[in-house]
Length: 614
Image (cartoon, rainbow, N blue to C red):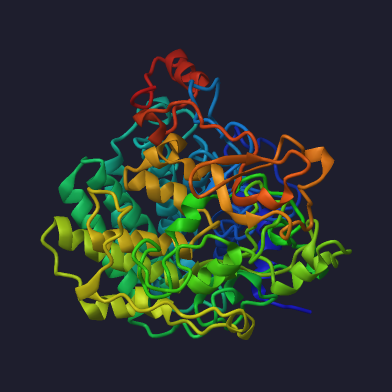
């Protein structure tokens, strides 16, 4: 049986959540959890309270059929994926309410973050208050500083997410009495002020959190990795949205510093293949994974993410031709300028041989009719899972009984955060120029991962290293993005496909217009398929699909299946009835608050400012 202390953490976390609840969340004495007045006796009590944060912030693959913050099942709203019929529209009107007082992992899928909910901020502030008022006499100075750092980390984490969704938010740095209306109903603080507070919290974290606090638990390196994420996000958001250059620079410099804490430790490496990160029954000891969530059927802690990658389950949102074309060829060039044989072929069997190995590890090598685009993402499924297509799956590969471990934070993200922050600082803020050594420590280290034998047998090869003096000149590059930064962005897209980074990335780069699918017909296409051959597990050349299934030839001609033209059904797969989403605007970068929240403030004699544009 797979064992790990983190199993215990997730199972007992619910028992300590009630300690921080205010009257709106829980107004009866808890019957099965610790009582505040009798808690905080020693470091074990403090540790127990800290574990209550884990399910919310180290969510992994969620549990059961849960989709919040889960790859594949939750993150479906981005420009990499296309669905049949009209694409999901952006929010267009202010909701009646956006508030939550729950400590569950509530989120907004269109914004990849939480609702208007400050329960977790309060929980972190309660943590710090109790450390000061109850636990401090019972702790060593080192322990007190460490646990204060843990509390500040989670507060900074939550505010980073809230700011990414709403922009300006009210900042609370202490527990607020439920009768202190002027504070409870304070208006929003500027996002810069909030993130300056987060910056200060994170500085304290790196200076005081333990380097090791037990296996697979929050420590200096895990914290530093997350800090590099949040500081990169806010630094680039401030820069590309032209908010505050000084803050952008400060945050980006901190992103570099935090990433270097991990990189300079030499504790992690790219010495194992890419697919193993997402398909292993146990991630214990994986050289690239800083922290992971354990799943174990015996403890009924399971998930369903693998099931939606098993070749049979339908996602409805699947890889489009735009995403496929973004993958670099194995000679390190975009397909338009590559000299690799068949680089201009978009048949899946050719793509797995001509493209970066992460393509083959993420997308099946033949058309699959269970995908809306015929390109089926199987990144989170072991190769063996595909052998059960058309058969009975074992429990580990179907339903909500998956037991593969989930990476929480990993080295590839750290080094890509690092190289992007360095490149932006060099390009726009007078920072030190990116060197070949920098590329070798980041992008090239990733590209040099070992390959699986099964991939090599298919003809998969490592991608050539990125050379600073020969950065590819992609014909599809946006004119306002320098070539090096473009290639860094491409690397992120390949590395993190289906994981949930894409929407947040294009938002911080001020590239939400990528969600306007009228910009390219390729958004409505899948790979090049021969429907006479690629007909499993769904055969589209049957009478039930007459006048419904279409392919697009290289010259743009559309051919529709008429029941007798099977030999002509070769071309780019046309997504059924796919149409663009309705127009959206700059306001869609951020979420509005609900009408009810505006009214709640007004009823108390206060004003809550609505999100700009709403």
